[in-house]
Image (cartoon, rainbow, N blue to C red; front, top):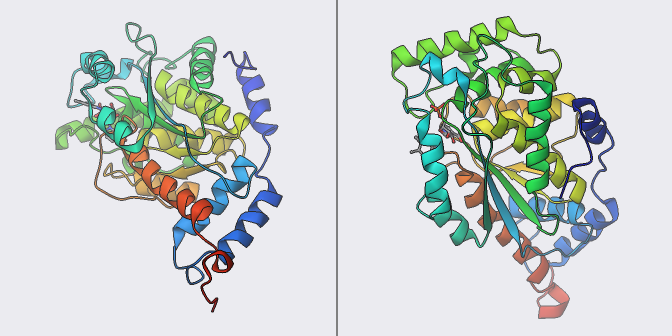
Length: 336
Ligand SMILES: O=C(O)c1ccc[n+]([C@@H]2O[C@H](COP(=O)([O-])O)[C@@H](O)[C@H]2O)c1
Ligand SMILES: Cc1cc2nc[nH]c2cc1C
């Protein structure tokens, strides 16, 4: 499907027009939760998750039947600065690996019962090196937002947005610093595993990018410092809101892309949950800034939607308990 915007300001207007959760469904889900055969609160955060999910699905007894994982891939001009432990050609090579079923995400999405889509974004045309010029023109960032929007299957009932892009922890660090404040060093980490010298170089690259561009507007930060896969994730998260599909965020890069939406229009991430805490150093700071508590913390730093997809199992379990457990009355169990 195509997207209902063709400029950044139209995209921003869509964020501003977004609707909230259905309060009647939330009230009904809370009431049902109180009647299930368990001590009150005994399912911990699973209970909150089920009630949250119900609000976005407009029903007090939802189900998860068709989760969708999308991996967006992009290439980054800033790789010319020597910011990754891997060469940029790995991006297109990993896209082929995803398509042939050989990557971790192929196994994780299968295990979670989710469909997997891979969207490669102009891999033969990297973004500009952001230490020299804006990463993307307005036309380019809008095309990436549209690609993200259009990749979301409207009939899906849970979305994970993931990415692949050598160099993109540098872009994500710069975007995070621009929209959330702080120094380059607060946000720059080792990514795929740069050594101390690489980390120092990468931090300087992020600082130079921040100094070069006027990024007071979060969507300008996405354009000038981000990448096509970051913009596409932002577009997909916004589309999911439009279709009332809850979203599980993945790791550091996904969270940085998401942060641009929240900072552009507060509340834009209310339909999202943080799937996991990445081992990338600044992810915790980023999730704290967004007020998100990760569902899992397994030391992953892979990207490609892996942590978010693992968390599908948690959300599915929460919804299965909420919607399919017996109530005290149905089971003939004495309520406390
Ligand atoms: O998701 C994360 O938190 C994460 C943390 C570190 C690395 N990655 C992945 O590694 C790639 C970026 O790392 P780098 O070192 O090339 O910037 C990109 O393909 C990401 O999917 C992902
Ligand atoms: C091999 C490899 C696989 C990845 N998957 C996501 N990011 C990645 C980065 C590398 C280097």
